Amino acid sequence: MTDDRSLERAARSWLEDGPAEAPDRAVEAALLQIQTTTQERDWHVPWRKRPMTQNARLLAGVAAIAILLVAGALLLRPGSNNGVGVSSPTTTASPSATPMASAAASPPAALSLSATFTSARHGYSVHYPSSWTVKDATKPWSAIGQNNWGSGINDELSSSRARFSGASQPLAKGQTADQWMTAYANGVATSSWATVTIGGQAGKITYDGGPAAGGTVAPGGVMFDAVAVVGGRAYNFNMDGIVDRKTFEAFLATVVFDPGSAFVVPPTTQPFTSPRHGYHISYPPNWRVQPATAPWPAGVAGASPPNPMLDVFTDPADPMRSFVILSQPLANGVTPDAWLATYEASAPSMPADCWPAPAQMERTTIDGQPAWIHGGLPICSFTEAISFAGGRVYELTSYFPLAGTPLPRDLFDALLTTVTFDPSAADDSPAASPRPS
Image (cartoon, rainbow, N blue to C red; front, side, top):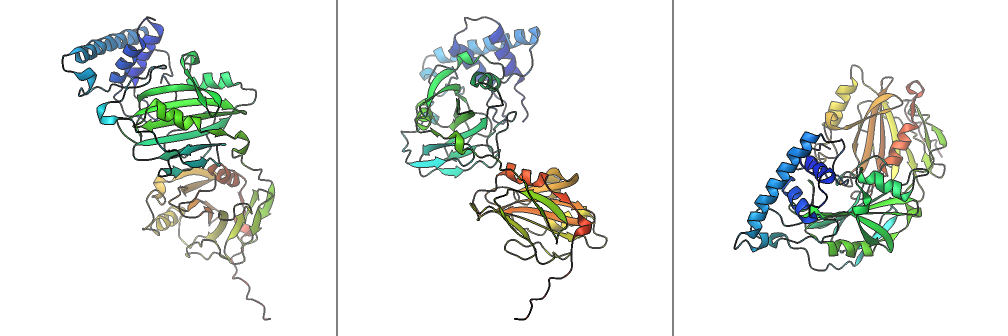
């Protein structure tokens, strides 16, 4: 993400290193006024990654004081109605204060948390309104990554006004809960965080009703963020939109932790060599494989399962999702770039997010060869990697039901890392005719 909030960072640095007697509400009101740059969500508060110079502290301090004076004049002005109707928001982000809602963005009435969501990836369940939309996480939350909205890392339960997000990650080997909290805080003293109960466990409020970052479900709303460490996993829960602290805590109270059920990539130790398509792969030993019995002719579109041109790998516990591989020789004179351009134009009805131009596809490597990845969203029904080796094109695709849950991306990636291409061993001869009975 791009973080352009240099003025805000300067103000926070000056306030942290300078006078200690500034009232929390005044400090946060000044920071709220300063925060005008739209950015992607970044959980870590404050957003400072490098030391500030003394000049920057002084300039930021002057800016903060000036804003406080202007804000005070507006708030004390007769008929100001305590800020309602004034362009500046009235929500604070004090660690201990419950935010005040403006008339234009009042928090919801008590929600009926009648439905239960169980996270297949992150090891928890939570109650939510049955009318809300559910978006399961498809990617892991790595130890060094930010779980931004829309990244696929979070489970996201949402309406048009509010969203509840959850994610978890295992503690590093030998890491304590306090050490994880400190790392999550990005250098901020965690003693300033308010305590909150999450599913009967002690947690911390790390962001308490301040303005929501860019990408919020309801622009102009606020955001709450909380963390807890349970069973060797660190959990992060977030709520953004037109919400209040009471609503956030109502969701947190329904959380049930189940760290043992969090998704772990199974070992890929079972080898397979394709007699048709010229590659080797290793897959989970409890999976099943159905080898291809027919070639994928050059110039013919690849099939989806079931089809005899596919090597098909499935988990018996989840047969609705499959991982398939096939390859074909490039036609005479056809380059990889030309093949990709033709392929990109072959599905004009597909959503652009599923079928972008090759230049917009995610890039990786498979067996040292360049590869392009697209799909991966519930609206796509597939996640696919395309690569070229020895005059052949290889398609490696995970299929899942439309609007269903994709194969976990870390498992998809793990399968790709085991692939080695052997194009000279491919067999493009026609399928044998059935023997007469």
